[in-house]
Length: 154
Image 1 (cartoon, rainbow, N blue to C red):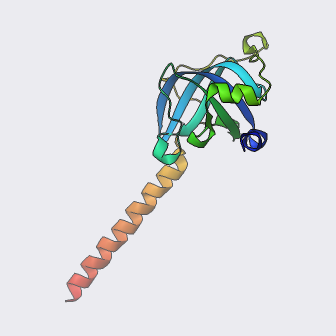
Image 2 (image 1 turned 180 degrees about the vertical axis):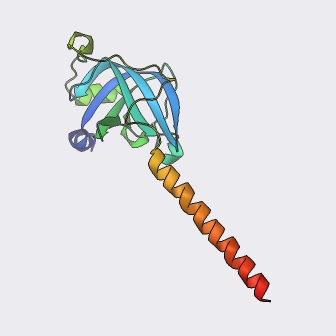
Image 3 (image 1 turned 90 degrees about the vertical axis):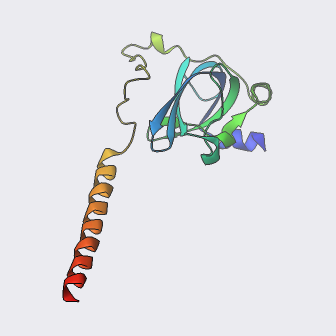
């Protein structure tokens, strides 16, 4: 079963949770120090998106906790979930671990942004939020106008 899940994932690693940040809209942004790559090619320091809490299948780890994660890439961002959390030793035993890639040696590689700064292409979809807000105002305004018109007829 774990072999199937590993085969279906885009990448897998064992590492330590360095930081977690609330990304809004029920999402979280995690930073991991990668100890061993079990599938794929991953850097030493890895950003992973997730739901904000375990109830929504988000990653449930504490800062400094070591564990294994199965990942999938969505819109260019690695995503993890509670269902993809694996005991580190179990994941290492199933796969063929290799060291993480050294992104610092890659020419032109950009450093990770600080956790208190937004990352381009990540974060809440502001266009959709604005459109939803405008729709709510229009529907609410229309309902109030209709209610007032009915009240004047009486």
